[in-house]
Length: 65
Ligand SMILES: Cc1cc2nc3c(=O)[nH]c(=O)nc-3n(C[C@H](O)[C@H](O)[C@H](O)COP(=O)(O)O)c2cc1C
Image 1 (cartoon, protein in one colour):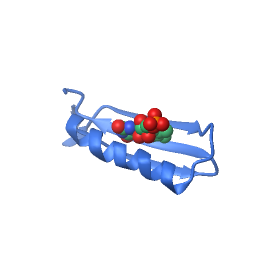
Image 2 (spheres, rainbow, N blue to C red; image 1 turned 180 degrees about the horizontal axis):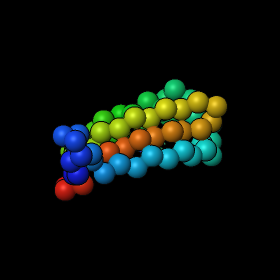
Image 3 (cartoon, rainbow, N blue to C red; image 1 turned 45 degrees about the vertical axis):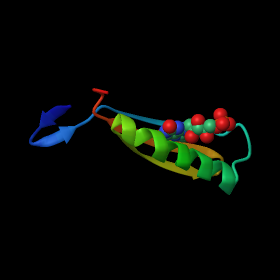
């Protein structure tokens, strides 16, 4: 973690990717369920947006686990 002007900055990654298959609600729910299960264990938080066949994801974490 870096500190700049009392603002904590965690390592992060931001990317876009195109789904290679049709993503229905069930498939999206599966990703969210998996992320909710795994991410907290590794101190990872994030944001996942899906629209028009494209994912946008922001992931950040302390990078120490
Ligand atoms: C766009 C996208 C974002 C994902 N984000 C996470 C995540 O934040 N955390 C995680 O543990 N898995 C994440 N996954 C992995 C999936 O949740 C999981 O591996 C997948 O649903 C398993 O599918 P399978 O059984 O068909 O391999 C992501 C997958 C995709 C496609």
